[in-house]
Amino acid sequence: MSYQVTIKPSGHTYSVANEETVLNAAIDAGFNLPYGCRNGACGACKGKVIEGQVEHLDYQNTALSSAEIEAGMALFCCAKPLSDLVIECREVGGDAIRPRILPVRVERMEKRSHDVMALFLKLPSNERLQFMAGQYIEFIMKDGKRRAFSLANAPHDDQFLELHLRLVPGGAFTEYVFNELQEKAILRIEAPFGSFYLREDSQKPIVMVAGGTGFAPIKGIIQHLIHQNIEREVTLYWGAKTREDLYMLDLPKAWASMMPHIKFVPVLSEPLAADDWKGRVGLVHQAVLEDFADLRAYQVYCCGAPGMIEAALKDFQAQGLPADEFFSDAFTYANPLPKA
Image (cartoon, rainbow, N blue to C red; front, side, top):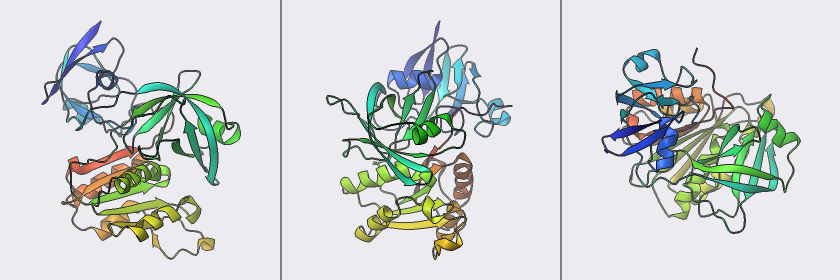
C-alpha cells in the first residue's frame, strides 16, 4: 500500500510506499525538503502535518517534544504515513540532487590529530559525484547499517571525496577506520544527502560556527565561495577543546590573511598549559554572542554536536537572528537514542 503526500504551500505531490518515511520518499521523488541527520536527532526536517496521520520511528526527544506532537508537528525523517497526508514544510530552493549508490576506493588516509583522520575516496574513473558543498555521504555497511560523514571538499575539487572522521570511543565504524582500514580498500556509499549548503540567492553577511570536525562541511562551503568569487562577508568561528583539536588551523588562517572579506576566530574551551593559547577561550557560540549583539541582518551556518547547535539556535534567535536564516548540520553518531 502507498499513500499520497501533498506539500504546502508548493502543492507538490508524491507517493510514499509502505514502511517508507515521508522524507526518504520525498528525496526519491526529487523534492528538496530540509533535513540533516536522517535519524531523528537534529530536528532539521521538522514540519507540520495538516491532514492525515503518521507514526514515528525512534527519535531523540530533544528533536521533537510531546507539545510539538500535540501541535501537529512531525519529524519527516522518522514519520511513516498511516493515511494520505497534507504537510506544511518550506522546500529548499534549487533542484534536489538525487542520491546514488556508488563504490569508492580509499585513495589515502591522513591522520590530522590523535583522533581525527582525513579520508580521500576515489570514485570509478567514469563516475563523478554531483553534490553541493556542505552535503554528506553515507557509508553502507555489510549489515545494511549506515554511517554519515560530511564532505570536506568543494564540488569543483572533486578528484577525491574528502572526509574528516573523529574517533568515537566504542564507535564500530570509526574504530575500524583508525585500526583496520587500509588504503585501496573498496567501500560502498550513497550520496549526496543533506540541506546544509550555501544559499546563494542571499547577499547577507555570514556567520559560520564549527565545533570540532564540524569544520569539514564548512571548509567545503568556504572553498566553494572562494572558487566562485563570492565576496559576501564571512566570519568563521571554530571551536575545540585544545590546540591540537584545531587540526587544520593554518588553512582558515590563510583564508583570512588572503581574503579581506573572511575573518577567522578560533576558540578553545579547555586549552592546555602547553598550548600557550593567547586566543579566545570558552564556548564557541558564546564567542559569537559576544561579538554580534544584533544578528537580524545575518545568515548563520552551524555544524557540530547537537547540543551546541540547539544552544546556538536558541541564543542567536534571542539576539535577533531570523529562524529561517539558521542552517545547521548536527553530527550524530550511529543510531539515535530512543524517544523514551
